[in-house]
Length: 284
Image (cartoon, rainbow, N blue to C red; front, side):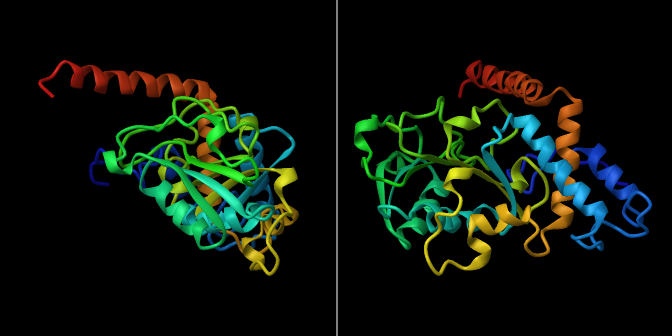
């Protein structure tokens, strides 16, 4: 094997060598099944255990309350840009957005095709160099939800705290920061993340959604795009991205072995401090 490179790509990003080596060792025969996870039925007992363990370990890592569903779906975060308004913009048909980066803008544009989406604030004219502070009074009181992108991959900005929405449902894209720091899941109605930046291989998205918000989808929604379809079937309505779920599950196990999200947050703060201290001490 050639020398591993230092991979700083935002996604697909570096995966733990231990996880990939273990998966390689089991590529042709997963734990006596006589086949790879890539080949086995998603209805089989071995895969049923894989997906249930993955969900259980993610619940432990993020301390996800029992009144939230965890959904494993295909399509990446980009598909969820459409799933969110199709499922949640179903009361007043309104949603308010904070535009803080490229992906926040794309989520807004997708919702605008499906309902009354409003950009409450944007930092685009300043090249997304800051997170706008918006008082709760600026949001429409009848909005079905407020959408934010927690961390902005390209521009390097992130929300320092959970914004006050005045009691409105808060939805967030956490693709580039999930599992890197502690979060209080209970402050969000829905958290979603494409896997390839922080969780596992591309092709999988994870949706963490409050149970009371499931089942509110618009009429005539495509079956696969309905949160309830996946909640009712344990994310096994159709053949899921089995290999991606398997690798994500192995990453969850490794993070638990390494001390959980608290330990990851401490490591990440030390790494960030080294970089920022160097920049602060330079001519930049």
